[in-house]
Image 1 (tube, rainbow, N blue to C red):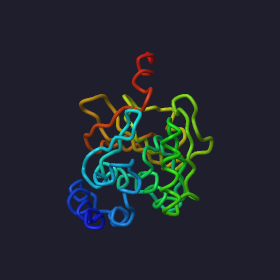
Image 2: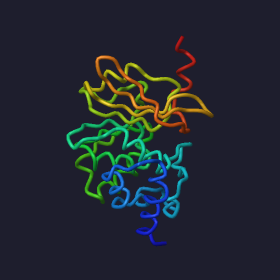
Image 3: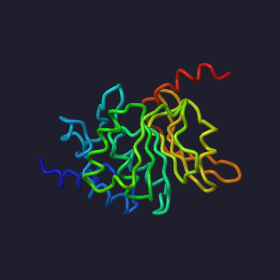
Length: 216
């Protein structure tokens, strides 16, 4: 398989179809090999518009959703980023290329370990802190960040998470319950503003649905 041509096809046929025009994002998808971050046996599907199973019932975002998310966040070179859900580490790598640093937390320690090798291979390990833990019970950071990326869906917005954002900070999160969920950009100002982006579907963040039942 010609992965270079497949990456070009991904950008021209899929990423553009999601109305992603930011030249920085398009360049990243051409330069950073998505296949390097996939589980063994799934490399040939890395550049298809399909979720890739990762184990533990988890899966990747499709490339179009990843790219549209990155464009909406308007990440700047000085931005400090918190990623909730490392997964395969490809989004982690994209964030590290765009911002100053990434703290990435995943519930599953084997995901964090598996992501470490391709991040090192592509010279991004110094910009990324990988941690394992449950964000719903153990918040990973104490200092505020500029960007929060949630790679699993939530039934409703966690208002307490917004306190982790600096003024002017942005959060990407998919809100709602299947079958209809809304990709949402949250901007923190004097009053937080929610901007609906597009409809999509992501598996829920582990534990989020069950915990919601007790929030009366």
